[in-house]
Image 1 (cartoon, rainbow, N blue to C red):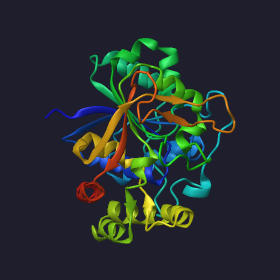
Image 2 (image 1 turned 30 degrees about the vertical axis):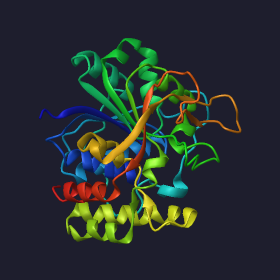
Image 3 (image 1 turned 60 degrees about the vertical axis):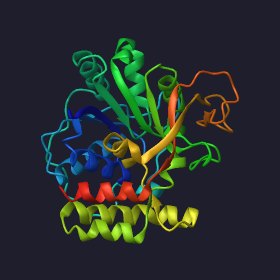
Image 4 (image 1 turned 45 degrees about the vertical axis):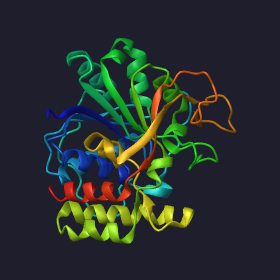
Length: 313
């Protein structure tokens, strides 16, 4: 099996960090061409810092990390320090990164990479707001047909919203960018709250990370312990949803997930429902499907995969 070429577009975030670790622990299935950072969970300076910290934690300081857009296309930036802490990676005590941040802008890296690689050979994995991807598509519409697939974490249908009553955070931060991406015509797979809220880091699952006894395992346990305090209080659930690693797990073991092809549109006009992912789950319109919208996950299988792979780092 040839490893699948991907670009991870991210705003770390503890769950983003675990997604990066899972990808770097799976070289047989995944070839990470680069990591592009965007403002989201915390401002851009911190997301670019955090991505490099995680690469070094994984022992992959050779990976190239690029800073991208520092604000949404048409709105003020909304961040989530109340969930992720002031650094975005609160929990473990990790050293400042020594690896360099690339000079090239993340959007230019995305454009250049897609133009230089064979058609349909690179997948984009956005696990934050879609500003970088939408900006790249706007600047270079010719690259859309070069994308193999976009697998993104964002949106919701049955779970409605986690930052407003109707909107999931990543889409809400930059709904105009999300609208561009969903209208692009590129193949899209969506990991919404409907599935990520079933991937709960329970006490037993977190103990399994810590029991790995490695710097990666211990740091992951510390990150998820910090991260889960907010969601446990908010939802009253036995653990916190581990959102972003679902994107990477789908690339490795797609059989862990089930969903359906539906039409998804993004609300960009109403402040009441701004950023809502309007998913035609029941096929009540005649709008053509534009995304594979995932609705369920084998959570035990997901955490078995995650724990096994993190143990390789």
